[in-house]
Image 1: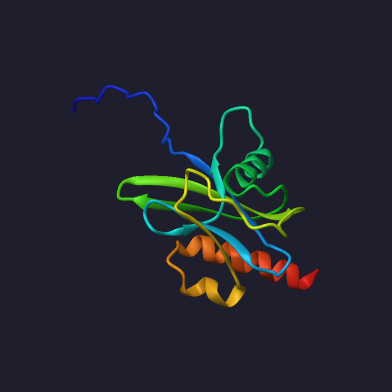
Image 2 (image 1 turned 30 degrees about the vertical axis):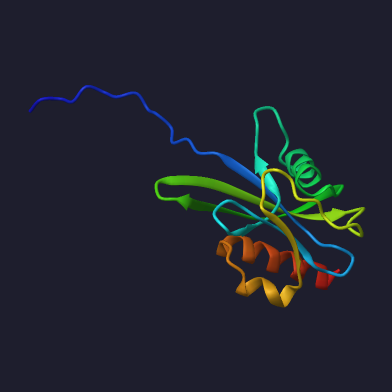
Length: 143
């Protein structure tokens, strides 16, 4: 029997995307439409030497014009936006201090929308985002 030469371990690499569930004063969730015509939560790729909470706060400001603070971790899950491309998603519940003003639409998205809780299940968006939104509403109900 011939031994196979030992191959060095190569870890699987995929981006980590930090997303925020943020509500306006009327209890509507902020969602952004991407290039795939799906609604998504504001957020972005975690960079080296950066805290996840810092990333989500920065992304919410850049993508909507709102100032928000990250709250509790809501969920983590794997998402495959395109065949063969996986992204590790981390979602936080966030509180906005100036969500009384309409969100802006950044160059990264096609549209910004504010949706009531009952509208979210019918939207074209990954189930993981819907689950995170539902979890944030549940936590708000308990507060």
